[in-house]
Image 1 (cartoon, helix red, strand yellow):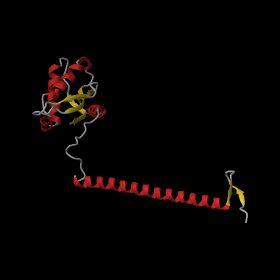
Image 2 (cartoon, helix red, strand yellow; image 1 turned 180 degrees about the horizontal axis):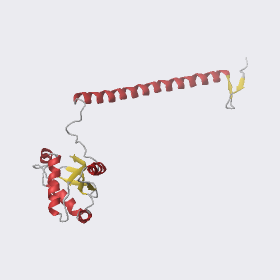
Image 3 (cartoon, helix red, strand yellow; image 1 turned 90 degrees about the horizontal axis):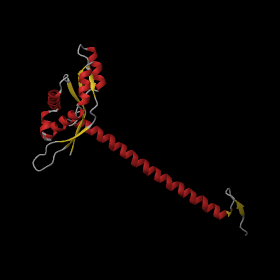
Image 4 (cartoon, helix red, strand yellow; image 1 turned 135 degrees about the horizontal axis):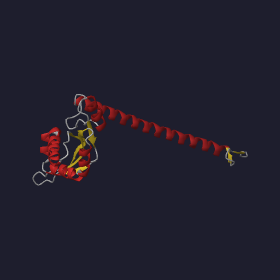
Length: 194
């Protein structure tokens, strides 16, 4: 009995047995990919369940509120300026200091902690002389802030609280100003790193 040869779609000639083997091997490849896809899908679903469950557990453990370690962020300069327009004491914001990296005082034989802070000041609105003085004394203001943080340990700063730190910095900067006084100190960032 002679083998019947026929032409396949890709232009090559195969016997019926070869063609049948090709079809079986391609089905096995499809089945192996299907199993791989199912396995990957199961892994993905498991990861999503773990993530959602962990988040729910953490929120339930903390009563649905943020931990004490997280600070409540200060309002943005735009929010402060807009809210002051409604009152009789309109303020402007001096935001030119940018982000400052300070090192706190060391504790015992340990070195100090790295602190990243992004301060900005509010001052009476339309006080261009004070704005110009703040711009001229920008390096001095940064130096005051760096000196303030380097004189306290991380534990002392955390015990004092952010509001007392802001008051201390405001007082030290106002001592150096001649043309006016800043109203408040705000922090966009206030983060300790080990």
